[in-house]
Length: 298
Length: 331
Image (cartoon, rainbow over all chains, first blue to last red; front, side):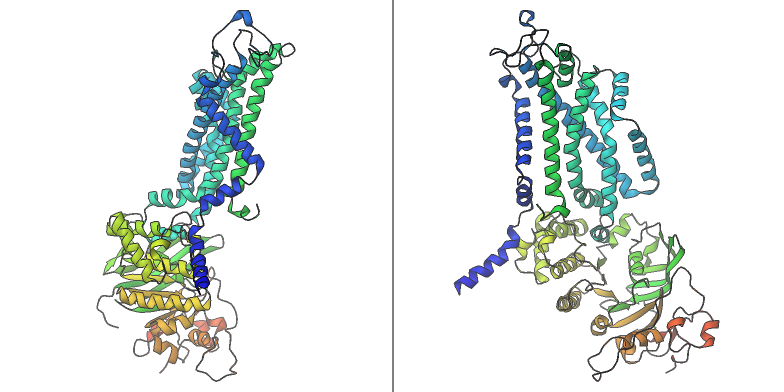
């Protein structure tokens, strides 16, 4: 009798304990490669925050008497032509990479999602105006756009962030609009209208959260894109200005010494690869965990 | 018909949809009314304009492609079709004065919000309650609908409830602001038969308790037979017969109503009676002839029907109206 009682109690309790977040974590962390990617990102974030603790030398301090040394116990990755410690510069480069990535993508995601939400929700003329603008933006290759903006505004950290932010808006806006068009059809949107909710309320409370999963995935993937683009711009010499320690400009600085001191280009190149790979892996993992169609298959 | 003001009166409402195949007149000059405390049934087959008519009362027809061409919707004697669809007046009526529940309980609740939050925010919006009072009221409402452990359950998400429970929550939400009218658009179609009965019982009991009028829109004659006081039968965007439930079921006059009743099994008939389906298909609304739209399927049709326009509704006794002239209408 008591057994039956506890059993029914259990049955009643089960649905109450299902926790969406826990399910998400379980699926997300079920693949080793995703744990690896997440770990890399966490390490990079910690490195960026604690750069002064991790870097053995001042990344900007020149010491010409020690220029172009190979890897040694004193300088694990050697020194560059100006005698600066390569490892310290890579550690500080993490800051620039993540800063550019996060702010540029943050700006792009906010503006893109807002535009997509408005275009998708109101449709008609507003939709046409916004989406044609997005199409025009999309027709220009991102690097070209960033080059043009950098040429107009000059180089430097903030101009790189602005130009990358603008060039990443179209993908976010288009995906958001597509999501809104789907979600808008749902019965619970009509139900919300029947209950007297206004436009703003429907958009922010009912539509936006239901559109998020694919956008979160796109944001992580775009972080990788933005970091790679920043490296490209810096490599081309229109990104972070010297002496700023950006990975892209470090690859550029080093490639003249590729035969004698390969580490000068390889090490920052490897860092770029690692961070882009990590963000892509995490993006994939998020897609698997957030996509309801994949539920139960993983 | 009494001329006293009705709670809700729809007059000559016409709705058109613009499509690739031309303009479709989904609702063609329908008139009906609901009095306080009444349960009214609106019956018709799929695509005859039942839902479009209801959504347009709240000005929720997507425009374009839909358009309210003409007509009035008098609520407490005020034509609410003249209100701005996005304005505060219309929003106060939606949910506050006229509530609505839909066919698909599985998709009518926002999946990312707890059901408690959805009810609480409706209460806060319309009744200006503070969060604490609204939460208390939400728990009461969910409890009233017969959901156990209401205090805990309102913090659950919609996917943690079954279809029947979700429909109860929809009812709770629709009734939360004490609306004067509850429109139930096919409330039981997506549910299995035993759950259907429960939901209908709850609907009937609760509208009585809340002193709300109920309009049941359905294609299921059994549903209205049991619960409705008065019934409107719709065909191809028009009302073809109306009357009290008794008049419609005991003495149907329009061939379409007769056909409908013959095509469903009844418990009070001898065993072994063959069900008689209505032959043919509903007409294509994009290309409607001027004559009676039911003509091709009618078992009483005559050449005169083919040569004159669709008959208007006419009174044949009591509250019984029918839109057929083929001789079957005489008492």
